[in-house]
Amino acid sequence: MSAQRTILVADDDRAVRFVLEQALARAGFQVRCFDSGRALLEFAADGSGDLVITDIMMPGGSGLDLMKTLKASRPWLPVIVITAQSTLRHAVQAFEGGAFEYLAKPFDIHQVVELAQRAMEQTQRSVVRDPAREMDRFGGVIGASRAMQELFRTIGRLANSDMTVLIHGESGTGKELIARAVHANSPRRSGPFIAVNMAAIPANLIESELFGHEKGAFTGAISRHIGHFERARDGALLLDEIGDMPLEAQTRLLRVLQNGAFTRVGGAETLRADVRIIAATHQNLPAAIVAGRFREDLFHRLNVTPLHVPSLRSRVEDIPVLAEFFLARAARQMNMPLKRFTPESLERLMAYDWPGNVRELENLIHRLMALTPGVLIHPEYLQLPVSGTRSAPPGTGSGTTGAPAAVNEPASLEEAVERAITRHLAALGGREPDDLYDAVMGQVEHYLLARVMRETRGNQVKAARMLGINRNTLRKKIQEVRIGNPNIDDRNLDTEAEAF
Image (cartoon, rainbow, N blue to C red; front, side):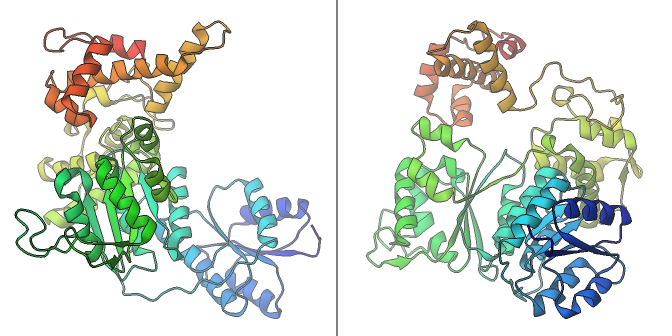
């Protein structure tokens, strides 16, 4: 790396300037540091500098304004944006303004050096912001956790693309909210956003709902029906719960994605599918492919840009700000005085597992706003189930909030499977296994069926619906794993969990 390549740093934090200067200088760069964007602009007025690293929040002007000014005259100049006030709005604005990268503080200094080296080898073209109608383009998507910051950065990178997106995450994590944020920050933002829940449409009506039908196409088709693909023209179509789409409809959808055209049911006119597809699911689609419930070729068509929405329990640090946000919004909606959580209540919220994720948190807070007397929300008003509580997260005290922590409870399905695999490998005593898949999957299936049958009190119709399989398949699997009807043999599922 030539020592003549110069990096300009703008940050009002002297410690940050010092760390960046030392690390970048050791990597072979010349470094000039400034405590404001104005000072950097004065220095760079003659065209000096090969890379800029800037904070966003600084006295006398933001780093985003600094980048805008620089890009106006030097669109090729790479800019790395760093900030301690990281939000989805800032991430999108940074990438739309042409940022080479966006990092939240505290950052890994080695990552900054690597980015600087990479930026020198690439030309960052200017990205002109589209002054579309003023609207809330960020939809209340909130999070300062590392997982959410990565999600923000990916959405920011998508801001000027039209690629197909597959969003996956547990129920209640806000997948539709993320889909709306992707659309609202895309070139199609002025077009419609249509959300369709595939699990809510009867199988025999899916094609008609998606692609429309002509009058007389089938019994009851008394007039032409415009489908969601036409309604979403020039915009985006969210296919929510895509994992619940029947195989026959998957085949039709795949043809549309491949050909970019479709016909209404019972029609002959070929229509262009001018729509961006965003799919979402809480299911494990690779596992569904193995089980024969989802087409692999369709999965690859949809999974062009995967986005993972983290569970709430995996971003505990976001719970306080989410709780305050939902409290303020509920107060406005109900026209009530703003309430607030006591420190003990926040600690209790952060110790809970949130199986329903952000949706469960929001519903709880609406109930608390409506039913809690007084202004302060104390722990006893939360009424969170003890079974869904884990030990308090680091930095929240000793967890003396009256809720015992779960014992040996896996933090996630992935951790539980990892335990099962490790247990089997350890039992082999160094021998090479030849049936690891069947052994582990059999144990997973055993516990899953036992837990769901317990949850539904032995109602096989409900259990089959919850599992996404038909009742005959469920009966067969129950016989295979030899679990009894929980109403008759109410076995202790803690034993099942320990075996798992």
